[in-house]
Image 1 (cartoon, helix red, strand yellow):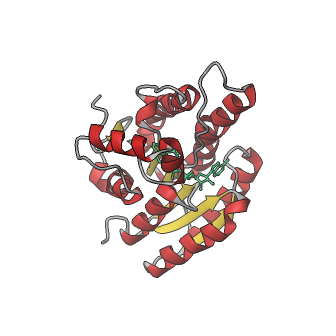
Image 2 (cartoon, helix red, strand yellow):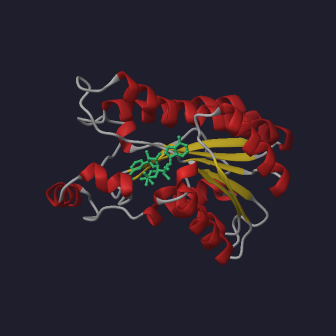
Image 3 (cartoon, protein in one colour):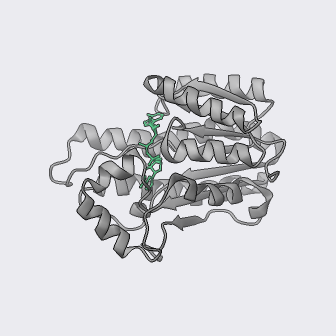
Length: 252
Ligand SMILES: NC(=O)c1ccc[n+]([C@@H]2O[C@H](COP(=O)([O-])OP(=O)(O)OC[C@H]3O[C@@H](n4cnc5c(N)ncnc54)[C@H](O)[C@@H]3O)[C@@H](O)[C@H]2O)c1
């Protein structure tokens, strides 16, 4: 498939789960891919690189913590030089460590905001200048339906994802004049390491399967189609939007 031929996409937190599926999925639709993740995920990241290359596309991979501004700027500069320019940015890296708000440590509050909210800001600001100068670009923020409606034990996480949706709306208005679109995807329950840890038990899995209109939970590949849509010209007049990709759990 060719929707993204000639484009380069940069995906954070790409060693597994939704990030890995999007990296390989965008490659299967024609994009060359820059992948990055924490240094401790190097082996998994190497496997994703091999999958992108097996799809016939170029792939550059980097150790990168999205809370480290200096490292982000270095990686973006190097990836830009090697690839010829970043056309699509997918801010996917994220963490979730459940806790009730009363029992949440200050350190965990800060860690969630550092990765899930500030990470979006830092990586986006590092990539934007080249998109502005080319008068084109696509930015996709992986938020969550939790960001639309908080649930118990995820108040801090939900607040970071609400922030990601707000950043999406504001960036879209600040960069739209340069031909750049900014949209968010709000996954429901996707069976990744994070999704499975979050559910915790077979009982919870059965409950949420039953609550979901499509009577199944999500696979990381379920997020690929919406990502291709937002990354490509198929969505040229769509910006500042947040799309629920949840099989029908949440309807607003
Ligand atoms: N799985 C779900 O049910 C679900 C639902 C809604 C939203 N999401 C969001 O989707 C995104 C991907 O989640 P997933 O389910 O694939 O989770 P995951 O835990 O399987 O993957 C998250 C990835 O982010 C990376 N990461 C964590 N901290 C990082 C940092 N500081 N710098 C760089 N990379 C870092 C991890 O190493 C990992 O590769 C996250 O933003 C998550 O909040 C997931």
